[in-house]
Image 1: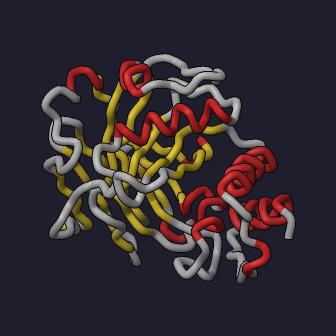
Image 2: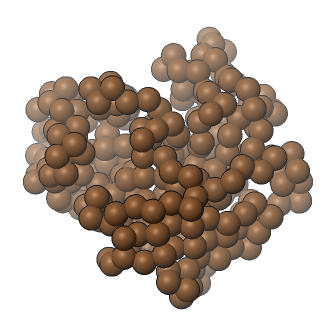
Length: 253
């Protein structure tokens, strides 16, 4: 299976709502670069435009990873989506950011001060985690990375000014709430596994620059879950909030 064949299969899985039954070890992308190429090839084959990104890391010291999100899969809160349009639905409550100005590609890396200085807004986000592979989650990480890092959709709340919210904000363990049909689904421990999610944005700016992509102000960049992934099996209403940033709502029908 070449990269193009895998991209075609991922596209078919999305458009026909048909799981990829199995991927053999020899068909897994050989490295992260190959997986990132497949992400963009799927978008190109679909004729899609990037509307958002998801980025994250397993620990503060682990290598970050990310994926572009098709703008047709980005929804404003309150959103109403059909649960049957996904293969599986896992909900994550996240903080997302927007830049106030574009960051074009360039030879020299972007410094932390430049990246954080270009931030314009923050918002609450709900990511729907999904996979086009029947084997998931028993699947090689590089195959998951190629499959948009398991993104199914992104729901975005209202944008608040970064320079108003950020001073004094607890990025490690903010006060938050997440409910399903009024019942809390917040785990005992909350926190982003990457630590302060803003550190991921520095990697993100340079990841895009190295690939000749301009970081656009209209992109919403979500930065990993504070609540783990909660699987939703039946229709219901998910509501979330993060103190000082705002609220978000998703109705699954």
